Length: 140
Image (tube, rainbow, N blue to C red):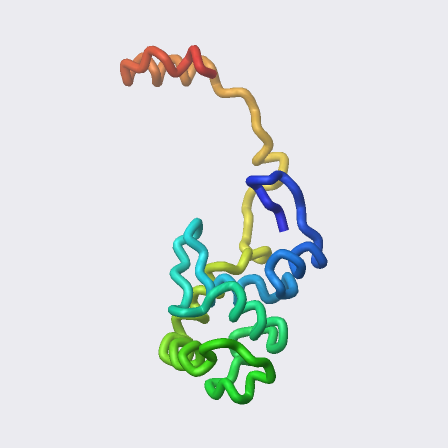
């Protein structure tokens, strides 16, 4: 996992230490807790501690029974958590999908096609002239 703010990479043990769950459970964790940066609201009353405790034991959303007595772990407010998840399970599954990094998306371009090249200066100058833009060229 890349921590962009601190500019370092967490390995699997680092993810477990930071979030309390394995890397495979991070999309499930974000579905429950939410992620403001990505616009994922999460499920009401599920916080980091409850999500990590339950997911550390059960792994994924579909493994969390509606009955908290079957979770196999003690969590404060388990009945309310189970109720909220039960009412919004379909939304939680959607949130997990949104939080999952896709590695199978088709990409038509090659890596070489995506490599940065200098701008087409004459075309850029013509565009700036057409738009009346006077400062853009000096910043490139």
